[in-house]
Image (tube, rainbow over all chains, first blue to last red; front, side):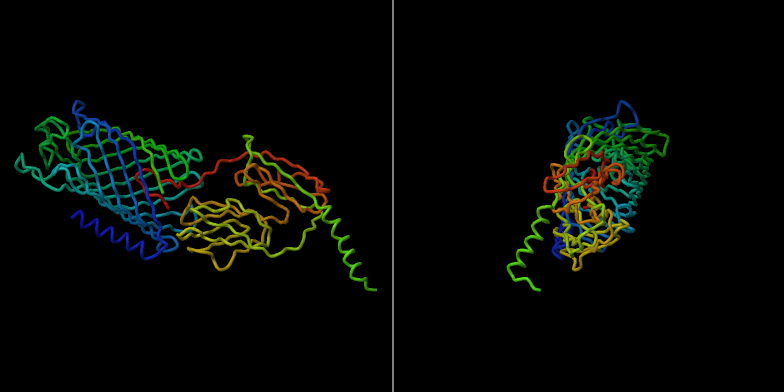
Length: 293
Length: 219
């Protein structure tokens, strides 16, 4: 499925480009490190697994101006996450994105709407984890004066694993890595100086999440899908539950010339299970350099 | 009585030479608040007697190169035309909301067929509706006596008729008003009359060209 979809996408990109010389070629690259202190989404402190990953995100494609204020962009995406300790989480991804963007009026302060959809195939070298991630959503934004930009978004995300792990408990079959959720978010950006941008964001997500724990009868009571895993070394179980997740983020981005920026971001993520399992939290820090051509 | 040809030539030379010899020069130097030379400052000399030479139709150019306006600041005399050739291989959508000249050149590539007339003095801020970070300025002067500072902050305005002038400076990021910079000078001969300004500047907040991680750029 993956090669066919990507081939199809590539054809679209080539057609868009060859159709007119007015298409705009673009390339974005981001690389750096990210640390997550609760990769296992664990409720118990002694089950939290933290690790650092080297991350690379690439996006390249064309943007076609469909009219005075509407553009369509098609990009191929490449991603890579390489973990230092929990190498089973390391993966590479290949996918594509479509972005339709329209402005309601003339000028930098005109409100804009962006509709985006993307699919990325992730290869973990593990049949149970390999699969597709999908995202689709809409973002409405507006610049206020020279320094502020505010946006709000609604987004659906899903991960569909390639295969279903062996059933270990009758009635709890299916992949615990198949997750989905609805997101509502707001973001404010402030130009602190000519080259420093500070962002504050809040995201609320309702849907399913995957947690990893030592075999525990209590979680089986609230989970609908369970599988064995050794992704964090010792034999554990991965299970899926319903949860509401809130994420608060702050980021600083400093431009290093016209095409490059240095970025530091922190996010606090708290997931409240629908059941009596309670809540877990995570701190995520990332340091990256992004380049745009 | 008609003078013979040789006499007519001699009269013409006599009439011309003094005027040339009397052409005055203004030499200006502009610095930022940090003491560094300030490029892109427009120095304007306005004759106090209000006498201005007749307008000759000119067409100036503001290019779009690598998704930027080039030059960033352009000074023209009121009544001039400006062409906006797009030298990128993509389309731009140039506009201005500034009172001296509100205009829009909807999505185009190449050079628009008709140049834009700038007939009212003032400052015209340019933007591109596709690439929000693109920013440029056209300073429309009421006189033909103006110049723009180079990287060394210097401006030379020559061929000025001798007389008393009010000279002033403008920069896109200057704090305070242009009128607060007015200096009165008397220009007599070719020996340049020197004027200096030190301008405190505001930061320039442009929309980001570089995308944030995980977010596609505007491009």
